[in-house]
Image (cartoon, rainbow, N blue to C red; front, side):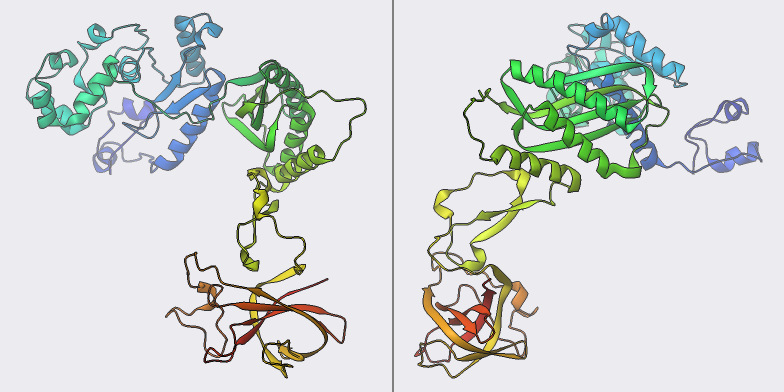
Length: 492
């Protein structure tokens, strides 16, 4: 075990990082140590990185050397808000220094060059070709592994400039292709991409407060005002959005993010504000403003074209828009997967004719898959057809006079049918795992049901109590075995 970080008193006692713990305790018997929690530090630093999105919306953490410590901001189009790149660099570094952080930073046109400036030439701003600026820096400025750095040093290639003009195939063969990749990325010959931690948004509205706020009601009121501003921006560009993000920047350098989604593209400011109100109700006691919030930003995501609609004086409302807004509010309060709708499928097998999908998915419905309204279908289907025992069928192909289902006998007075449904021979025939054992066989003592097996003949049966059942005979007589009967559903 070795030391990772030390305070000022430990350094004054002669201890240093990478020193073994045993040697450190021998020098300082009363040394107080604590095991490092790298995962917790990485998460804390990631949250700290999100807070920096108040300076630039494109923020990420470089994890090449460590999971924390290297913060990357793409300041393209944002530096002018601070009075230029130099002013922005000074503002951000001084802000962190006042918080007690030891910070070094640099600006360059490439990620590799900016990282090298931050670590080896802090405070430097490099524009254009960085080859001359990088040349005197050690090869460690290329974010290489320790083994590669040691190998280059042993060969006398200690500076980045020593790699210029060298035989590239030979370098790749000796040290791997990563060396040339890092060199080209630092010089800007190959673009290095990164994934922002927060959603990339182009349209947003924000408000800074001279005095921090903390009440959730104040936050929601500000969100409503920002929604009005954002809706005007979207309307001028003829756009609508389905996702909206509310970023709350706390004065203790943490950020809270709330996200709501709509089933259809919208820019209705009142509807957006209501979605966040419902989302806040779900938070409950989880909301914590800390020492206050000094900035709020509302951003729109998942944009699509949305034309303006002229409301006529004699127009009629069919309630579709109101229903969509209701779906959005319920999903915002209960969760996007809590509200589902029925989606019809292209099949005539009853248990496969419909499925559930989240309301917010809003996938188009094919009119050809809608069920035939002339066909009698029960209000409720069983999860899967259950076997029944029938008694005294009138004729071999006729309906039964009674059935035993779950140990209860039902005597029928009326019958309608049969409606024949043939198997879909053009589909694959997968076994139903729910009705098979681990060995792939039907459970002992139970009839086996296979949706793709044979023809079904459905009957609508009414018993002496007025209850109506939907049952079917699986298979036909004359095929060498007696068909089995199943109960599939109930009518109202």
